[in-house]
Length: 282
Image 1 (cartoon, helix red, strand yellow):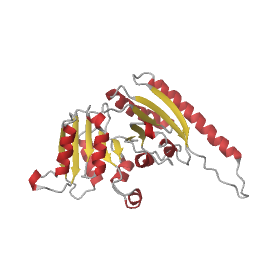
Image 2 (image 1 turned 120 degrees about the horizontal axis):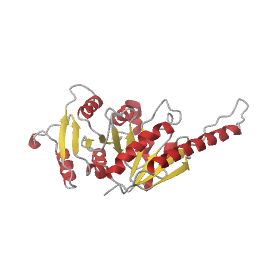
Image 3 (image 1 turned 60 degrees about the vertical axis):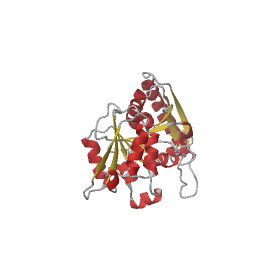
Image 4 (image 1 turned 90 degrees about the horizontal axis):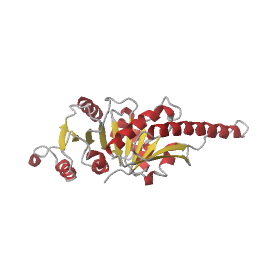
């Protein structure tokens, strides 16, 4: 198993460099991957004036902005990719909705992995584009690139899998197999696991997942973390920074998306803080 098609969803010039850095990290490990750079034009949000008329010039300005933006991104994307060994192409599509991410899900079925960036509220081309749509609706693993990573990443050699015994965590681990196989260190992390005397403190689900990954040639260790009254997010972030972890793998939305939006949840917390490169799978 490998990632043969990598979809790099890029929304602005400001996030291009960090996304291409992540693309390079992946293709350094999987040199036979084909990279598709994607720019998705959202549908124009145009409102009528007080008399009920819509200024057609707003549509022209919308199209002009995205035509210029996509062309700049395409040129920089191709300039970087031509120095790499991977094959590549660049596509521009139109979304049926007001978010480009929804349009990106339309072609995600042809990708093994999606790479995109954490939302930057200070970038007008990104601020209103909910990339969690890709995590929730694409059906593909999504490698999210943080705005400000805690650690500088030179290679995807140290990978941690956040696990809690649910199907999303197991699915994420299997979706990350191509990168897990090339890593030098892989850890299975469980925060405050239920204790099991027969398994010497490690719950059976974690042991079974570790054995399954080991059969793929992955040398994996199980680490149990104690929150000691702190939030699971703080506990996880502290560990990732202390161990110089390059990438986190985690299942997304074990609760409903609406419940996480209203009450919060681990997926929402990680999307907001993004301590490291994170591969989400659902």
